[in-house]
Length: 517
Image (cartoon, rainbow, N blue to C red; front, side, top):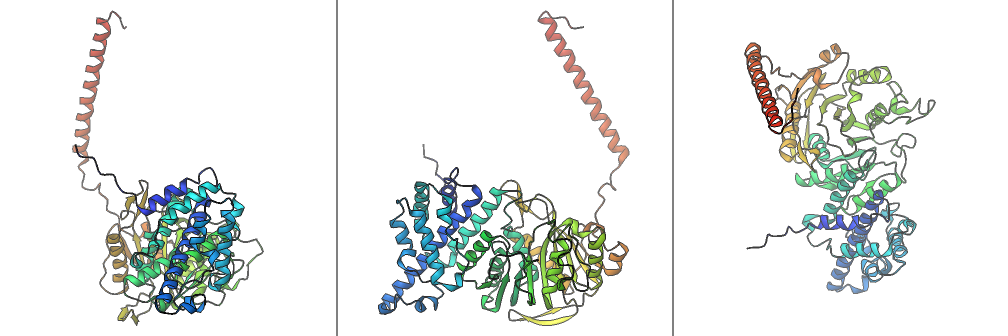
């Protein structure tokens, strides 16, 4: 009998198993920083060694220790104690954690673009079991991070790990990662080909990574974009810097990790594209007397202290350029309701900032199972002609119109309990949106509807899509008399079968000598 073939584990699966060996030694929330920090160190070492060998092969051995000959090729220069070969050589020693910290610190010191990006004395502070750390180093050592530049091996590992960690950490954590299919959908809808891209709550930088992938997939150039972001959590800020560095994406994430509301590090920015997934329903985001006269709310009510949703919206509105477009995710509660939020929402609609409201399926996020909304704001909905990625594009006048979409039937399952959009769904959704921006569009029941501002005003400025999209009443064609007759007949049969079963059971007991009254 032929032996069944054993499914070969992918590189990502092997790494995940290695990371899980840290269980019991450190908190699971630390895995990502340990694993991704080491993968980063292996990657910069591999690229450094490759560049060094190239210089020697080109007869430039005299320049192998000159930083400029590495940075000119977008390669980080590494002193010996920062190289992976040095780490591997000392992997079995008790002070390996200190050596890793020293390596990371030296990489950052020798490469100014990495300032604030790498963990500071992180491995030593964790008190890791040296043998488990050594085992993890052995696993990572087997990865040739630059074997196939076309496949973006390290980027693939980062994506896999960030998503796996987000799933593993579950509710209340994992905010550092937005599911890739959602980011892809936003990128395909707002098309960030050229200009300034901003994310006020950038997490690990996924919005920027997918934007660059979108540009590459459509034969654009990442040189045509500049990236701006901000992140509150220090460890996630470092993850973002590493995540962007391995892909050669230059970004201004502010000088430090900081709260976007209390320490806005991009006050004068006017962005062409904004992509964001800010924290949902953030409470107590400002003090009662704080940020009351902040210029970001100019022309609007001050967002309430009880919920930051409209604080995030107005922060993004204030950052839009003349033709700027924003695509961001919020909890559904922001679509309706009263108080200051109602007044801000009403003003946004009256100012013609709202372009599209898109309901997403439940279970798309790893941190919550609720259905959430994709908002698209546009600073210029008037007719205009512009160049985009080498072709002329025309947008019709969409003044006083809002496109509502319901995508709750569009997702496909993955990882058993989660939902994502496949490429076909993303193409369909973004094509519908772009058709609406042009001329070739029609409303589709249970999917999309273009509403006028007058219609929205009559609905008391609610942005709940189900108030506008037509839903088919599938009960209308049912013959209820016939249906009731069928149900009665089925119920009668069930009762008869139940009575028959009772009689048979009584007979069994009587034969056994038990009398049942």
